[in-house]
Length: 214
Image (cartoon, rainbow, N blue to C red; front, side, top):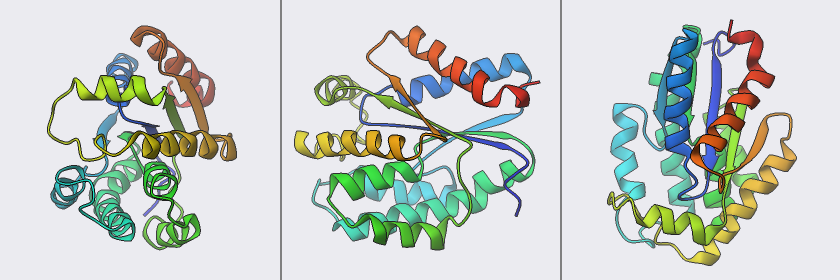
């Protein structure tokens, strides 16, 4: 399967950073550009992956061992790529994805202090050469993000209920990953107004992927 025909953008960040909201705003903007796109999410994004999602985002915070969480995330990701992301990219569509592999590194690697080299090996076996064209990391202080997330009250709050120290490590993980992958990742200040964040993201997409918008 060729992943080179389409455009793959991932939205990353901690709890309450506004990823999902900004993804929807960018999707609406792409509508105006006449771009053929899909929106999707992780964990989930395919029927079989959505079943796994419930196991990960609901229940007690200590429900799984870190390695179990990692394997569940990558099991869902394999289904997501096979049934949604891969075919869409092959067809030349833009794929806007709410979380992808950077979240596994940030949450399970940095957050749970699990060996990132082991995660990298699982990643290679599962994801292979698929790399986002652009990753937008929405950064927000942990307390602010958790306060925002607490107001959503959607029931899928297993990760939100993990300790502040955990979320501090997750935030640090995202920022370190962005610094190590600066050719792909762009960090956006998510404390700004919703419109300013959207404007910043739109400018980044125009700068990085403008030739694909025409």
